[in-house]
Length: 97
Length: 455
Image (cartoon, rainbow over all chains, first blue to last red; front, side, top):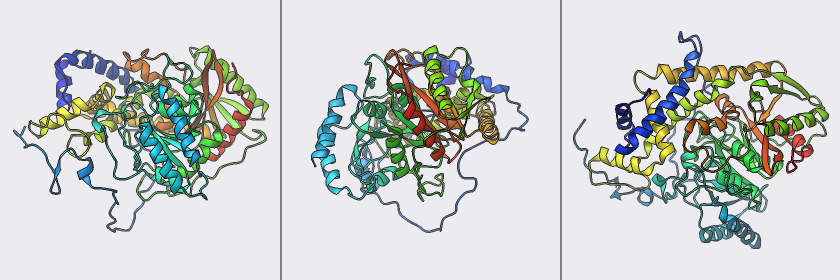
């Protein structure tokens, strides 16, 4: 298995995602299977001779540098979990890791 | 007015499929209001179009089938929705889908699975399963879905309707909740090629709010051709492997025969990197998803879970509680392949493979092939629960569709018959921004293939 229980915990921390203790073995097993499966991509030469590809316009279109507010039907007070006096309310930062 | 009532009645009747997320009362009220306001001169005047729940609307909530956006009311609407309304269409409610469009069976919605309209023990495909099921059940003539790896064409094939995925950049992504930004496109379902194509034509075209949307006029609809004379249609051998389900092969063989009779020149071609498409997709899509879904943290939108800890505790609790199993899996895989030490081994290689897959298509089109014909999915609709325990088996149902997303090409799924009552879809893949040619051929195919007969 390519992904260990500790790997899952480390990745979950990077992804800011709580993972329940008893779900760890199944997640590790499934991530291992997925990563083992996609590992067949190693068939590609690594010398950088193959360019990468992204679809879409070949050149970035520039637009006039003007501030044009995106009109919203209502403000964040409607959709935010907690919003007071123009601010999103969050708990304290806590210990810096 | 009475039309709007009839539309609402038809949609509510389809409730047993669990395809519609909008409560009947809200739907009736909104449809009546929309019908009163609709422009009678619009080309889609009075046409009800159901919308996948990952496309923002002002009329209804946008939840993406996720707990993390439960009750979310968007303060703006997608450009595609604005264009539909300007053309006189009615936004006919929001449809159930796999959470954040991640899935191939519409079993991963927090609102429960969508039933296949012809066999309730089966899945309608996904992730736009709700939209496909509503069109197939006759509740609406057309619906919007979204495509990242086949999420319109695969359910269209399973449900026996038409599904179009346009060229990347043909339709604005503004207001489509982002999953894999280099792959995502809004797509269209229709009960016929014409219904799907005219909705696509309305929503296509430039949009200053999306820098990846090409600066082009809206798509012009072709006329229905008399024949396929002059068309060279490629049959990629990698899409017809020996292990292909014989029922799918039978339906495809019949469609190929009929296209030949219509005058098309059929030519066997090869897209040698096809076998790598699914692994490539399942690196790129989760990587982009893990970045895009970082925005859901319990601060700006949706519900907040366990806000009593510190900030990071809030993020983790909200995301841990708010995301379902498949989304969590993809966020973790995406974070893994982008993390230090693994980027080159996974993400960079996937991007390189994507270039080779796109080049395969260019090579074929450069040699005089106009379109490609393939099965849309390797099998008919599968049983509910059949692939839930095995993510790879679920991913493999996208094997014939992900290539067009990776290469940014347009593709359409057309019903080409049934086997034991279950629909089979045939796919035409076109050249970038040549949807008109693809739709022309689809018109011809639709006209000659008995879509609801046994193949």
